Length: 360
Length: 243
Image (cartoon, rainbow over all chains, first blue to last red; front, side):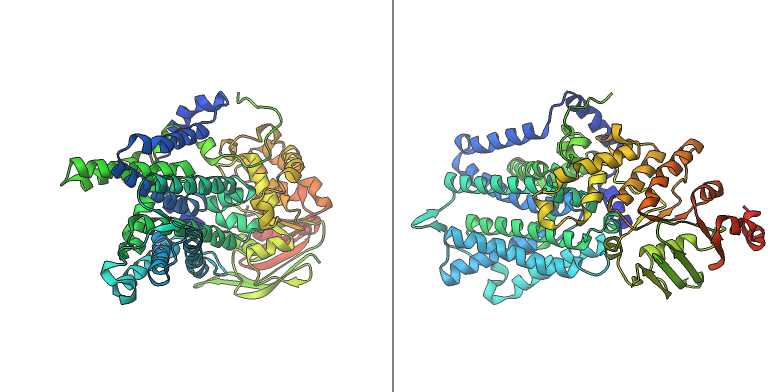
């Protein structure tokens, strides 16, 4: 199982020479004691804060969607980038939460933000617990192939179910969802919705950052690198996996409920394989195993698609596909690896050394 | 007895790797497991460690039948092992490798809130010092020499204060000097821990072990003190000369 895991990782991670190159590139900053990650995070945050001021209204709407997808990307990054669980069905949690809140709004007239967002999060969490419990909690560790096919199947089955179920609107999904509300205020598309979503992204990002840098994060790193080894230390490896999978599901659920209200409708694709794959691409493109990489990946993949589809109406999917392939082939650790060295990407978890050490 | 494995049979398809093998280890005993290639040493280690489930037979550890325990349950009962293939976590620092091993039994809440991080700091540094790795504490484990990686892994295996440590070829690929140091590093742990060692280097085994068990074709050929085994005619014929 760890073996098959490493095969998959290597297939995705590919060339080590590239890592070495990135490491050399980043060695300068590390030697000088500078940290690259906080700078990148700061730049992205400032850019995101300023975006609605410079963007036209229709672009702010687009940017809101992208921020929601970045939140969704975080959920996959936690699961794959940090814990090494290949979830090809992350849209199941995203979409089922979307459907869930859409039903709340349609059938029960519940649109209060303090009810619908927790409800969506809970739906994502519950589905992830159910699926994760089934796929990950065997007495013996489950293989990467089993988990990836299991999640893929879950997502595919949910898609088919949604298409066939009249109550869920069938092929058409659920249209014209009422806006999210706080008291009498309605969140419609535009800057307020944008800043709401950005605020949520920042909070979730910080929580995730706290988590992956904690001792729990160290256990996740062990899980990702060699699951069997850490079981022999006495870790309940399967429990750890189920927990992080459930957290990922909750984050995906939160993103899905925001998405449903922002778009105003939900449709079967939202739980299906296409969206599940999309989030994998965001994270691989930006750089798995770094939270900011997932965010950057979502922004750039969506941004480039948007621009390409405007300018190369017919062939843009081909250009996008080639771009994605190039990055995955030549920068297996994602775009973030241009500026971020291996040492800082993995990070260190122990109590900080008292005096600064300089590498010889 | 600390560890008692009896009547262990392990069949892989048509191959019988173990055919009624047994192993008994007392407290604070260093026990060598030797035998020609293919005699079943590693398989017996795996059955004891929980990496393989024996087809037949029983493994008891501190008076508990652990035959069906998972590796996690064995670790929590006080058993630890170092794999034959080094499996330190290469991208993590040495410090984090040890911390990872030390914090294995912290509660989930402690891990999430990093509540044992400060508490374990001194232990991490003590272990690194003990295994002569303290000056590399914040290097990635991948940067270590092969021998140093083996030491790091032994340190990690000892982190949970096990009652029994299983070492599969601890000196594989080491220089003579590194072997000598490994022997020195292992001596002090005898005060609180027993050891089962599978090892091809017979000099190393003789120097460090109290008792030996010799396996041949999946069966125990002989078991006893080092001098008893050295005097054993059958062992000399089947194993020592051939080696």
